[in-house]
Image 1 (cartoon, rainbow, N blue to C red):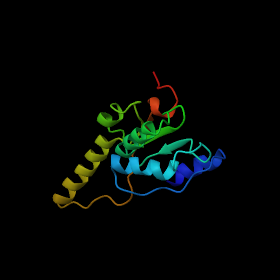
Image 2 (cartoon, rainbow, N blue to C red; image 1 turned 90 degrees about the horizontal axis):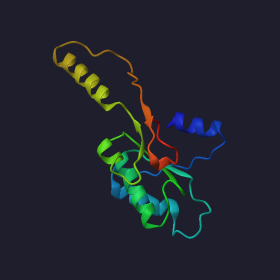
Image 3 (cartoon, helix red, strand yellow; image 1 turned 135 degrees about the vertical axis):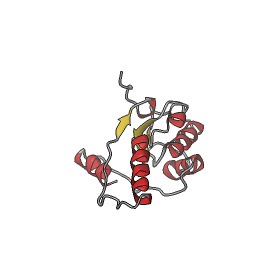
Image 4 (tube, rainbow, N blue to C red; image 1 turned 45 degrees about the vertical axis):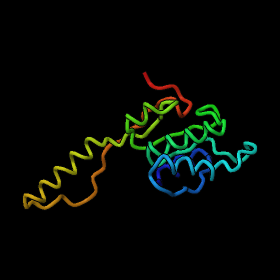
Length: 144
């Protein structure tokens, strides 16, 4: 979250306070009502919505469509976790941060096996690379 705010600050872009709720499409749908109010006028609307996961983002996109708000023409939407079955089935296809979950799961499994085998876990924080998978929901053309 700090890096996200830092990058926006570097570019002089305002960032709103995060909305907190369940990790579900229903919460994404409800969040649109909070962010976009009654739908009267575009003043104060965000340019984009960065969601905590792809399910929330799908709910956001569905709710925006119901309000006649275009994605990505009016508002960009980005998810987080790149759950391909959700990201690719969303209309438009969802741009999402890929956290490299297969490697994360492998690392966690190996650490657990070490602990079960009586070996201590390596101390510290493991940082794994992630990447932005650009699809059509953010308004930029996908790579390749």
